[in-house]
Length: 60
Image (cartoon, rainbow, N blue to C red; front, side):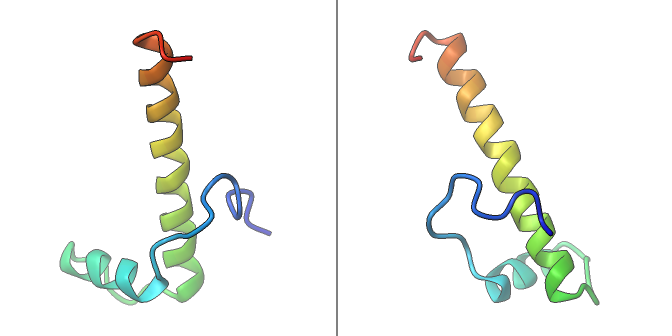
């Protein structure tokens, strides 16, 4: 089970799009599950960064 699945994003980038981006960066031969885990982890990192920036700037 993926702990990031459905965390906060209602619509995510497709696995196919993420795979293309990863392949352009030299990350080839990844399974769909690996691509999904990478994508979901990046969404969590982005959420943490956004919330940190909001609290640092007094928006929360």
